[in-house]
Length: 535
Ligand code: HEM
Image (cartoon, rainbow, N blue to C red; front, side, top):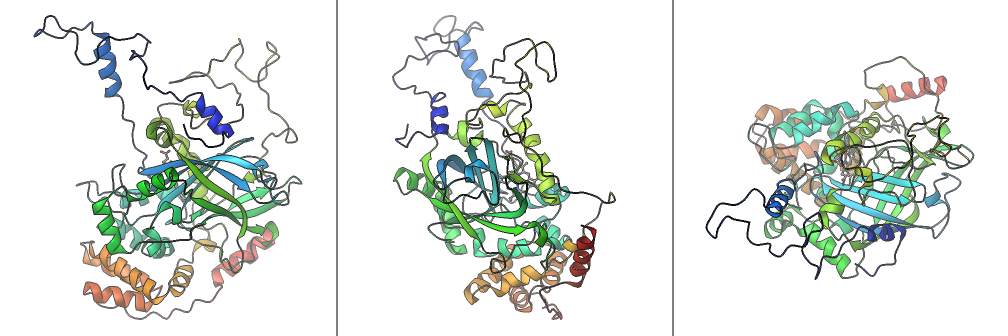
């Protein structure tokens, strides 16, 4: 075990940590064995016997060692650490772990790539997951983010389509690379809300030098609620203290070939050597009454909130200071969920976020084998948990008593809900009204303004890297018609960009479009005026 200060999570994990060193080998029933190399046979050269419980138990356990890899973000690497708040955020949120300067909270962070399988290479051009579990005194709070601040799609109902397009193609399971194939580009061309994210994905941001040098973003707009019940819109940022660094494509190719574990090794070694990775937590906060004062919809996950308009307030620091003891028990079995919140943090109506709130538990039920994965050591909150849920595969808790239902006269000690004052979570009472519709909000219709702003913010070298990345990745797309569709789509972003790609790929340069991105779109202004009137 590490010599780190014993925070609450460490103390809890200690109860589950086992050191086998120098111990007698036993079966799972605790029976000491005198032999572990030979099965029980009828005679030296005779058949193995069915009564060999040791052989059967050992093989059976081995046969069941693998669990399904995550349906996305399968390849990951994680570490323990601690978050320390710099100041009280009580004016904005009643979340206890943000309530006072110097307050420390144990964390577990898993970094990942999205598309590749568990055994894929680290240096893939891909989005990186940046998922943090805060073990707060009020329950687990999970900030399940990425290293890119926007997302490919605006509505979670398209997530299965996106992932089907990004993952290896179904007929031949090729390629591991997210964006170097036809289905990826076909999806992009036919779902143009991807434009902004694609610009980030083909920039140097998608090949980070190290997990230690990578930003993290909650992506969605969340909600803070303070003690007085006042609400704010909030976006979360992690800013690496070492700064943001990437490798160039050529380096990525070589590194992946030489050491496909380059990024996990880098994180592991840094922590072992005491060079603890640090990230500052930043918040962008918008007052509720300012919801419609922007020239984009603040709930649209394909949009950033420009930092010059909404500055990032730095509010704390996370330090990763301890590697896991066991990859499977911790990194593989950890179950993050954007729906794990604490009082003071709530959701918004972002339709991407809303779908995520369903997806994570659902997938974990199969990945982690039933409804009791919250009892696994890495997933347990550090505060007590009590309810009337019972039984199921792998149940560890031994609940006592006759009664396991709420509202009863038979027992006087079953768990009961508590008031907000006593720490009970109360959902923010947002007013919701409207017709049931299956449609995109008009305020989500502008797909190109921020993609163009991103391009304009790049240096010449960075622009060239983006052109090269488009040329390489789109060059792997066999269908010329799709390549042309993609060029046509990105001619809505910038003419130099598509000219560079077209020249590299030997395609006709699309006609220059008359684009003039002002900071406000008429459709959005109209939508905002209407929404303001409605509220
Ligand atoms: C992992 C679904 C969008 C970040 C996962 C997993 C699923 C999933 C099923 C695997 C979880 C597991 O097996 O434990 C979805 C759906 C989305 C969506 C349905 C859209 C509707 C996003 C977005 C982000 C994100 C927008 C970033 C803000 C992550 C991360 C992981 C993950 C970081 C890995 C968690 C870990 O390290 O274990 N997602 N996801 N996902 N997702 Fe999403």
